[in-house]
Length: 82
Image (cartoon, rainbow, N blue to C red; front, side, top):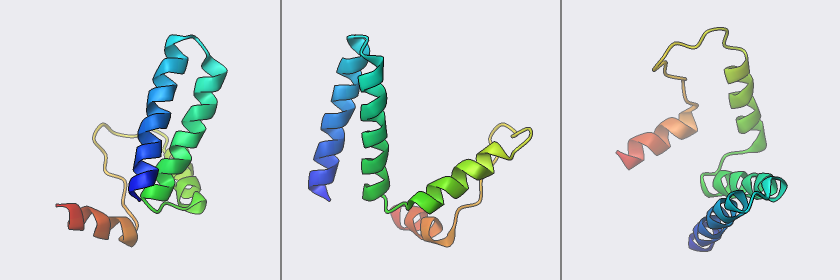
């Protein structure tokens, strides 16, 4: 996992450099890589991400500070980190 976290740091730095150099397409591609690394590190499947995005898209008027219910797997992660 440590190697993935190191790769994530490198990709994040590369995104900043690409943005500063106005290489927006490269930055966008790197952001996709960043997302995949974050998903792998936090054990989030594509189906879970898709369900989360679907939930956000279907909210007509989200209230400020509204809590989105987490799936049991994520609830355990949150409790464990506290």
